[in-house]
Image (cartoon, rainbow, N blue to C red):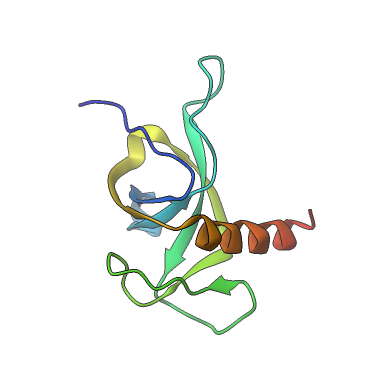
Length: 106
């Protein structure tokens, strides 16, 4: 099976293990260099909304109603990426990145 080739702004389904399930995630980082771990950083999309400030609703036809959640940033091994669902526009991606930066105090 070929290695996934995700890019920032793309939404992929990712196997997050038994507790995390398979869910859509927004890719935040570029592919790692050859001397780096084979991982990308992602923010999870959830349908279990709480209505708090860390949720960013970005309606897309390939996503169930829900939001990307800035409290759910993870590093995911490339082999766990299952398939590309679609991508966000640059403005939508910036919305999520800015909220994650705010959450991290950057």
